[in-house]
Length: 321
Image (cartoon, rainbow, N blue to C red):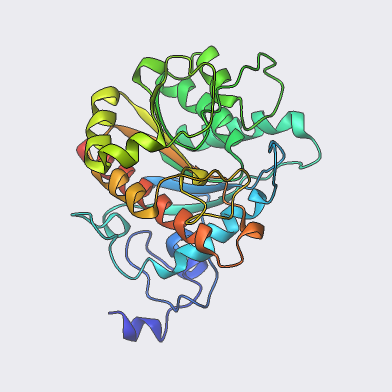
């Protein structure tokens, strides 16, 4: 396995026959799906569908996250040769994971976008398949949460972010990546008493009852205690995990729309995510990767690794159910 397979494997995104298993095609060649999973809209027997939401028309500053899903997929091509590091199982070999492709929507008809997202996610959840979404700006989490709450009821939200995104906005028709969790609380999609925001380092007058572990606290107490605090809040409640890449310090993720100094390092974020094994995670997303603002590709690399950790958390939870 490995070297010999690399001589013959190509375009596994289209040609691989099995949903399970590692991939050995050259990282620099071939069609790029997320972790070289098969592109498919067939949900039969699937455990997790990875799907892109290439939308960035809700941003308050720098655009470009419409290119995030493509960049994350490309960056992930270096990872599927081996089981994910730091886990005691191999989700790529043990679970059926597909790349469901991107949401199709009319970029010029913004009012229709939220429903398009919710319908897209509903179509996957109706098949009893979980989703891992690649953004796109952070607004996409709101219509995704509508689909999840319709099936599971009010959720715990575990949010990694520099911003709370709970600024007041009672106009539910507005599409804004800084107010959607205010709306999610007001709509009853999430339970603030069972929700946590990690990495916050911008001012907000009202967190609406959501627990906050801000970036200075993460630096002070360290990943292990952060994990313990998060788990004590979430308990066994069904949890949606959203990771805004600007949770990371701009030194590790410069390619994002609203970078804020003082954030988490990649090492801190990965340690926390791996420590969260055991939470009842039922879906998640990685958002706000904006490739035009990072010529090195480091932000997309971080996004791909974080998405992989979310995949592991989801599959670990699935194995316990």
